[in-house]
Length: 242
Image 1: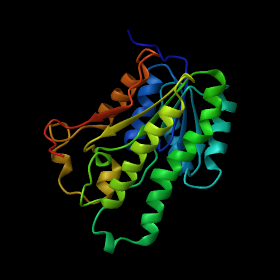
Image 2 (image 1 turned 30 degrees about the horizontal axis):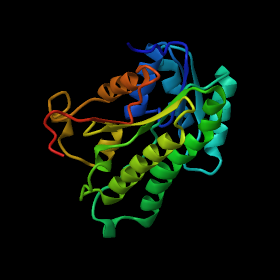
Image 3 (image 1 turned 90 degrees about the vertical axis):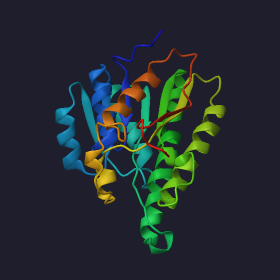
Image 4 (image 1 turned 90 degrees about the horizontal axis):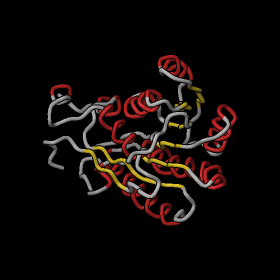
């Protein structure tokens, strides 16, 4: 038996595009009130007007010190509570490590690892105080094996796997669930910005999936009965070999 999520409040980071945007829209369609976060205020406000249900936009960079605390406080002030957090904000970096800009590597770690950790740290006291809540972290299939063309990105997603499982074990008995959604190849702006050629020919076929496919998987995680935790959910295109 599934659990209803209508009426609950969700915070989604990295909500202005790709997977985060799809998750935000789908949660809203499911009847949730959604707090949208991204770095660009103009883009975020545009997205807020397109979300079908109640939504509140909070521009912030989760990689910046203190941003997560401000974000969670704003979400609680907007809707009175916070039931779900989807820590989705992330950046991508591929190519030979020795050719990578050191600042790009630092940015990746700050966003993909520290940004997620700080977001989860900030929201847990709110959820633990009421004895209920769900945290979903956007990982990647890259966190399940070392992918040689994206070593820094792969390392960041390996870190998130350890983080999710460690925090999950700390929260046993609190009523707060923590899990990771780990997609394979998804057609997003992040992928296109990396210069990957020809992906448009794969989307919708068995070699590529849509952000909406990931969003629906997140809803599956959130609607499991409270005695069930989906710790890791890997979602791959049917013909993806990795």
